[in-house]
Image (cartoon, rainbow, N blue to C red; front, side, top):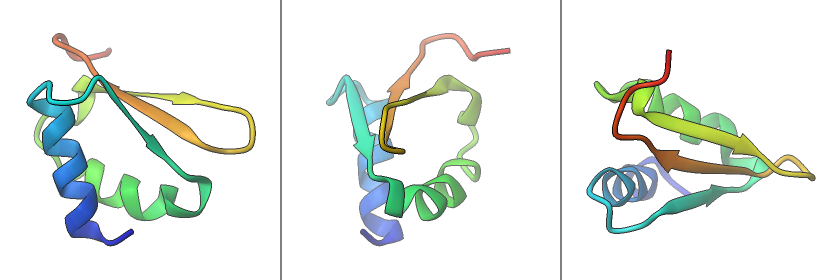
Length: 64
């Protein structure tokens, strides 16, 4: 995936169009580089799955 696709997924998650997104192990570093630039970065929660894939959810309140 490319950065523009990740931005679209992040926006869909933020706008509650999706409950969670799945990021493959191979795409993690690129996705994270895009995610940390977001002003509401602390509202995203990553949940690690077996095999190195990560599920992301958007929280209404930022994590600490």
